Length: 186
View 1 (spheres, helix red, strand yellow):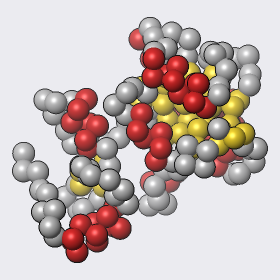
View 2 (cartoon, rainbow, N blue to C red):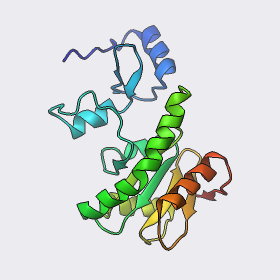
View 3 (cartoon, helix red, strand yellow):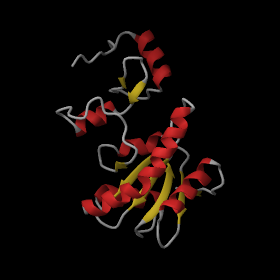
């Protein structure tokens, strides 16, 4: 595969690309389609998770499982994170299926307006990284737990309900996007 790169000494081009694509650090791998539209800004993470490039060109998935390698995305903007009680794949998959229709709907709405989706969607099982995230954001150990974390704004939104259903997730997301939720500090 021909991976194009910008020579480090070419400051002018690097600066223009940084502004154009919102690049904040190096190395960065952004994958573009033939028209120059961004497929993914997470090329580095994708290569790490898919070293044989079987899923290339890595079109974004509506819902991701939160892992050590993609946790950096939590810092890029608001993220819905559904914490589940187990690291069991079955429970994580069920949680993904629960929020996937809402994620797809939001992504389609913003894509139709030619805008970037304002929210990323994750499912988090039980592991050391998730425990650290809960500790850092001062979240309870309850599961399932539906949250929106906005690390850059140092804010969290927590939906405190007994059972998480698709209508509850959709209302929570829509209220967040309409600025109807009151943030708690992280």
